[in-house]
Image (cartoon, rainbow, N blue to C red; front, side, top):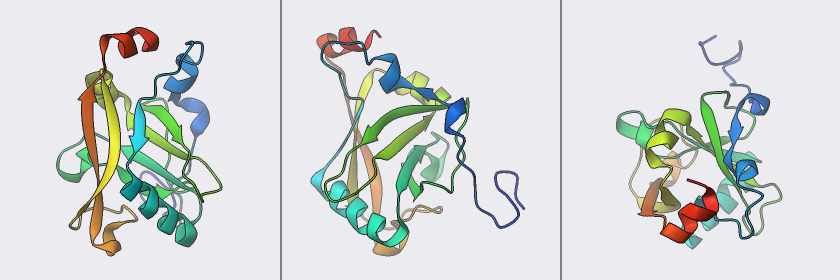
Amino acid sequence: MDGDGDADGDVDVDRDMAVDVDAMSAGAEHLTERIALTPAAQELIQRLSATHGPLMFHQSGGCCDGSSPMCYPASEFRTGAADVLLGRLTVPGVAEAVDFWMAADQFARWRHTHLTVDVVPGRGGGFSLEAPEGVRFLIRSRLFSEEERARLGD
C-alpha cells in the first residue's frame, strides 16, 4: 500500500472534502466557465472513457508532469480539502461528466485564467491514461476579461 491508496493500489475519491468553484459562482447570472476542452481533447476523452469508464482530471502544479493535467479513472484518485473542482465537463458521447480538479495552491495562482484542455503529440510521464496513445493532455490558458472576473467574483 502506498500513502495515497488502499492495499491494491487504488486511490479513493473523497469529493465531500473538496471545494467546488462552480457551486461558489452558481449564483452568477451568466456562469463563466473556468475550464473547457478542445475538440481533440473531447475525442480523446471519448476513446479513454470507452476503455476505462468514468474519468476525471487532476492538475497538481508540481514540477515536471505535475504541471500537466493528468487523466485518471474517476474512482482511482483521492481529492480532498487541498483540491478545487474547477468544473464538470460535458463531453458528447460520454455518459458521465468529467470532473476537473486542481490543487488549491495551484488554483490560487491560476484563478485569474481560463484553462483549455488540449492534446498534443508526445508522451507525457506519470500515470495519465493517455500515455500509451502517443499523445498527452496540455493546458492552454488566457486571462479572464474584466467582465468574466466580475461574474466570477474574483
